[in-house]
Length: 323
Image (cartoon, rainbow, N blue to C red; front, side, top):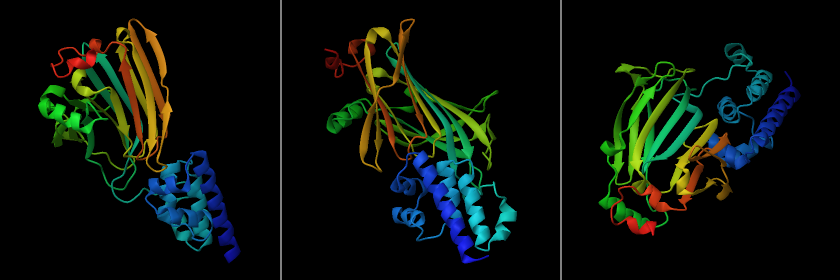
């Protein structure tokens, strides 16, 4: 095939890539951040100075989720370049998985409720293995920084009231219809921080997540409100398709709630206002984020009109906050 055919196919790939990048609201720099390529490389691809590689095509398809349209254009380009043998092996609509173990969170539901002075935190994640190797564990964490705006005060407070694994009553299950308890272990512990490794098994039987498979992981814990802090944050460390954050408070606490999205790629923070509903003595908030940005922070803060309603059994060094 002639060079013009190859050039035309490369141009079609670039048009498809640029279209879906704009559809997902990503800059070239942000796409590079998510795919692990240098920003100049993405720019060179879109400007036609470099030709796309198979690895680049499959990573951008994974991030932009174009319904395989980007990948189809890459296969056409590869065929025009003289790599038709790959086409018969992969198929025009089959996106080859990234090498190694790669995980996508298709849906995360984060829920926090205040009940009798204790925050009950529950999380549900739909995990999808998209790599070439099975996944045997998944890491989660608990972060309860009481005074995030005052590091010295926070460090002093948590040194006197450290978080312990026993008090949080951590539990986790795997599966949907017949969820099984999961084994787990603490991999890192600080005064206000716990990192926990969930082992993908059920009832002691290994349940690795093989390439192409999905599973549901639920985990939960509880922390006294006086120790937790008035915020909940989700750091997007894995590609995530959908994020939902829910808060639920007694109406007598008179909560004011706001959310913020911080993107370290663009170095900007955007404030949002979650949906609010009230009924049966409770007030609930809901924030839905479609395709949250990788490495961005999604944080919800709240303040109570009457903080004393949340400070049940608080020690003396916390009680002045209620005045």
